[in-house]
Amino acid sequence: MKLNVKAFALTAGLFWGIGLFLLTWWAIAIGGPTDDTTFLGRIYIGYAISPLGSILGLVWGFVDGLIGGAIFAWLYNLLTSRIFSSAAA
Image (cartoon, rainbow, N blue to C red; front, side, top):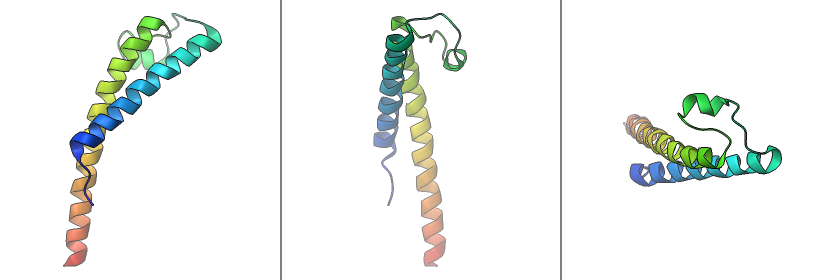
């Protein structure tokens, strides 16, 4: 079974972007907005636990998930085709 690379990448991007957006708003609801540098703030430029940071996290997370999902699906298709083609021989 092969994965559709475009569909998997889009799904991974949406999950990671929306997940980061919701996680940021949850952190705002629990502790309030903060300008403290977080781990993700070091990776995603402009990200912070703030309303603007949640939007930037949504965009960065979507792009990151899109690229990561595409790489994962491509590698999965590549490896499964080689494994099944060598098992059939």
